[in-house]
Length: 399
Image (tube, rainbow, N blue to C red; front, side, top):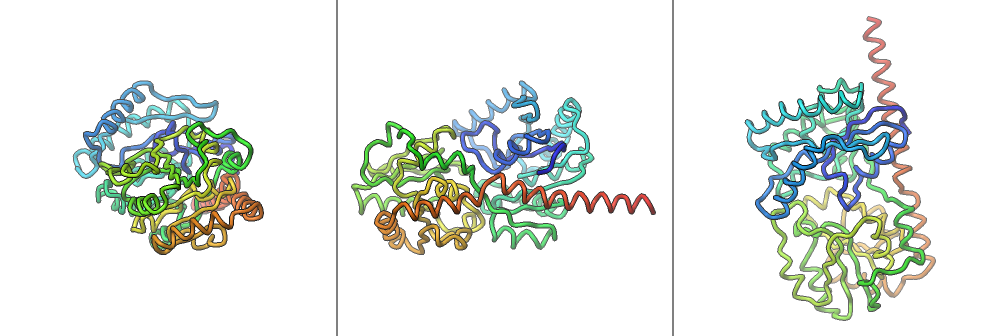
């Protein structure tokens, strides 16, 4: 792993988000051997006047007033204040000035010098020159242009960042294919799992109270959003199999103005459990007979690798998924479904076939795909590019 570096990470979420994504897993582990400043979301999407967005904006102001938060001796979090109206040139100009002022003060106070700048958001391109960075990394985890609430200007920012970044990591094969045309140093590094944490779902954990009923239980953990999940598919399963319990764990409406749950609420066997603390997820996972990836097939899901896939496998669970491109390589470890009818039949097959040998096979697969191994692979790439840049700089100085 890279060591003794200063890393400034522009994230796309809050550090204390109940769902841990790649940015949380990587930066927490990097901070064991490096100093990390995590900059919370710069507000890519257009906010609405919904209560949740108003609460989020109010919370951001409070966090900003608190200044830099110290998570550990080597991990710091800062919540910058920006106006999230990026489609307006005047707003972008003000944000650029105001954020540069904020970040300059923070970085100076922490005594970060020649950092690695690691970005999950394209608008971080505006600040690349601010830090005299030794390296810049763009970690592309979604096709942002396919998100209904991301303004078009972000696409232009992303192209600029792709061209300027020293390294581009992508989490889906389709992302790799589309981004590598802008940067020759583009690498495919799919999402992996916090294996030790989710493997607890295979052990004898006590089930949460709302998971103790024991009909067939189908489960999903993740954002409940209409542009990601096939609500019609879930309704079909609920109507045809009223004895099945379908448990959906996650925050509703991430990334869209509103999520209409009317269809799902028609069925008493579909349970919307809301978001749960990360530490409790293995307990819920243990109560699932079959784990679901009921994604709509669209431009967004075509370009994603569901991090929950290896989390499900780490608990030894059977996984039934729609036919996601990213999972084609792992068809021996899950049940891929081209139609809603096939999805239903695959659930029946998964229930019928499930046995300890298959569970052990899934766990063995997940054990090969951990954040520790991913960090080592990324570090090898980073060290190679740093070496190239160092020798390049030395040659330039010699001339």
